[in-house]
Amino acid sequence: MEDKQEKPTNDDFMVPAILERQYIPPYLTNVAWEGFTFAGHEIKIVEATDMYGATVWPSALVLCYFLEKYGEQISIEDKHVIEIGAGTGLASIVASLMGAKVTATDLMELLGNLQYNVYRNTKLKCKHVPQVNVLNWGSELEEKFPKSSLCFDYILAADVVYNHPYLEELLATFDHLCQNHTTIFWAMKFRKENTNIENIFFAKFQKLFDMEVVYDLPTLNIKLYKAIRRCKINGYFTE
Image (cartoon, rainbow, N blue to C red):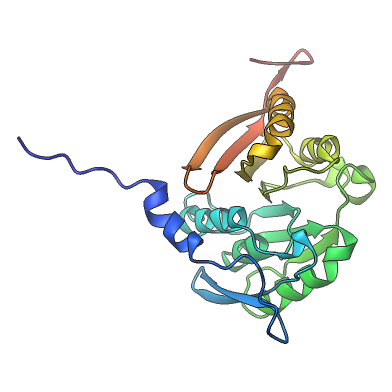
């Protein structure tokens, strides 16, 4: 009987590369940075040792691998993309290098580092100049991103659900930015200490969005989800 060859899993091609990365920026250098290669470009990311949001975490790499592998398939070029909780900006940079019209967002205290990374890695390399804006989840959403002018085709998010008190605001931000045609790509790392928080957030998220797993990486405890807004009929969400 002919042996059946096992189909490679997402773990096979992605996990070894991610596990080789260093996630704690080095202390013994003048500038703490890490180098990456995505979309045919070398990307240098400056990190900070004192802020979680200024470090490249594995979930961001999963999102970047997805964009690189399937960017053409999802027609990301010339599409309007916003990343929430962009952190160091790596995923926004990759999307920009692939031709998307990108807006990278995060808290004010992270904006300087985010701007530096985005602009130094995209200057004169991108079809569209990326934008970097402050976005406090759940705060002044209509003032800063009016519903009447929203046109985001994709929302990117990596590791935005963890042990913090702003999950209601995060859900409100997803809800506000997402239109009927918008697709969310959300990389999520599951942590045992956050199980109850994650379950509550997922239950609320699924009332608003249909979601499916794009990648399942058990070695890293990370899943990449694709989500779209659920349809409303007579004011009620359909099952």
